[in-house]
Image 1 (tube, one colour):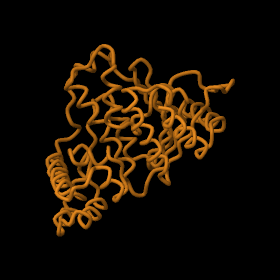
Image 2 (cartoon, one colour):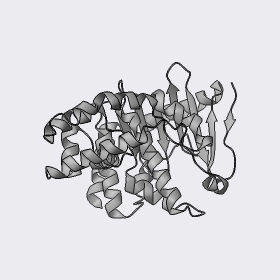
Image 3 (cartoon, one colour):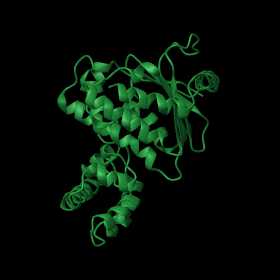
Length: 295
């Protein structure tokens, strides 16, 4: 199997037009449903957090749904219809939403789409993070702060689009059956308050929410560990449905999708050692809560 390398320098990619993978006509529907959801929520005097707690999502996810950035899932419409006294206005849209979900594709630059497509349908996703919170775990404000700090600077339009695309990838958590997902975060990721204390506090709370999902395990690798099997870049391991495991790395904005079995095996071996050295999910949750309390 071949190893595919990313093309071009980071600044060249940032200037390159980024068009949707497919003009499927679903964006308008998702935006309209989101606007209606927001209107009904505000009519009932509920905050995004209050609605989210009832339908099983955080305030960032509700915000993304209301702006059409993230699909308002059928089960959310079902619960929200009753909670917001919508009189079946939301429920009646469920068939159209289901059909649109079949057509919708995540929008990403050409160089990234092969990986994004694998991620969207993977049955297993495993991630090692050594600098920042992984994209699938980022809140909107944290993601905005991450892209705002890129060098050379990105335009405001590019930042907004990058954040939108990143949030759209988080729909992987909404799939059924859900994929098995795990993370190993370096402790330093929990100590670097990107975006400021307020933004970072909400990011830590978001980690706790996602980590509470049955199919997600988040582990923290303490900084005081003397041994380390991967003094290299962050990486992702995916198991696409019906295919062998693949790996993805990105160093200095050079992406690399790895399909060679021996290379993938070596990375998977390192990940297994990292998980064994990290705190278990419960102790990791306690550490995240401690970090949150110290902000």
